Each structure stands twice: as C-alpha cells, then as structure tokens.
Length: 82
Image (tube, rainbow, N blue to C red; front, side, top):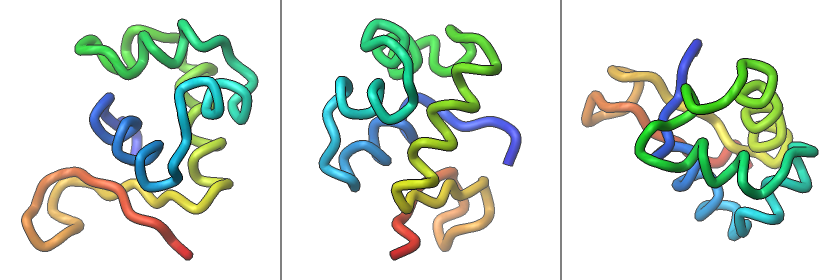
C-alpha cells in the first residue's frame, strides 16, 4: 500500500487506544505534525519521511492498513494483526 488516509490514521489510533501525543511519541514526531496528518488535508500535509514514521509506528503496534478492495466492503480500512 503506497498511501493511506487521515481517517485510517485516526481509526488506527482508536483501535490501539492511543492519543495523538502517544502516536507522536511512538513515531518520534511532534503532536502538531500528527494533528496535521489527521486533518482534512491528510498525510499529504506532511513529508514522506513523517508519513513513513507514522505508518511504521502504527504497524509496529499491530495495525494493518487495508487497501481498497481488500476488505468485504471494498473501501480502505485498518485492522489489528493481533
């Protein structure tokens, strides 16, 4: 999966029970950076390195990002691997 959405980031945090500060700490980013990525503009509001850091932090915690067509309803999503 090459891209993911702000909704997927928020959903992933919710699955993990993480706050924005907890995600920022896990990704070694600032809270405003995470906040921007979760905004309407989405991950495109940040640098590729920051987007990668968020993705890696969430995946290390057990989140799996689903592409369109990968789940029953056909849209993008997230789930826990554990």
